Image 1 (cartoon, chains in turn green, blue):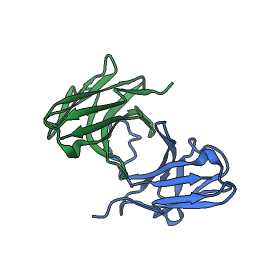
Image 2: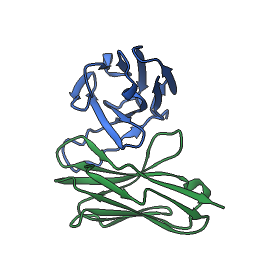
Image 3: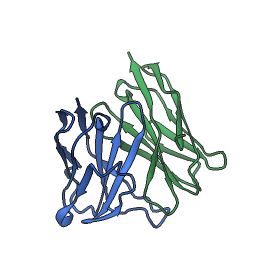
Image 4: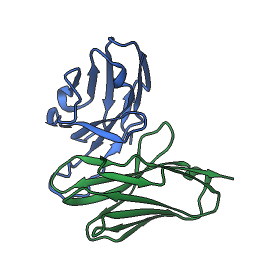
Length: 112
Length: 119
């Protein structure tokens, strides 16, 4: 079983609407959690990073939340744009190691 | 500043052949990582270089995979002989810090990946 589970697997939203992506993880002990955006044919690009003590982090229209007690994170996209169409990958690092645990990603398609 | 580059972008080979993938990290990044994404699965770690040394190669699937980073600059990943299950996207990433200290907010910068198809 993967240590990082994401939902929904995919979703289609209208341009201008908001959406929220979910990430549940079992990695322990925990160091930090990142959300990456991966455009088709490109490599993942880091959007946000949160450590144990951080509950929320924003990057433009992207807002990530973290509940380290329940081991859950979310990524909220506000006022979606066509360029937001991509795969959003939740990545968790355990404390004291350099290996990352990846989710399968949330595939988001924004339509006009 | 140039990002992480990978070559080739695509490779189609027959089972039993050899393929060599190349990664050029961001200049000055001592840490270099190889990852692989098999269709329908999550991205998985293969190995980690610190300069020219293999820090962690526990993710390498088997001895058909050989990674090198001579001189601590670019890295190559050779698959010999290739099997059907080796098909996937191979990503390379680099970072300044390794994050081994725990809590260090290192960032891994990913290349665009090499799409390998073994027929």
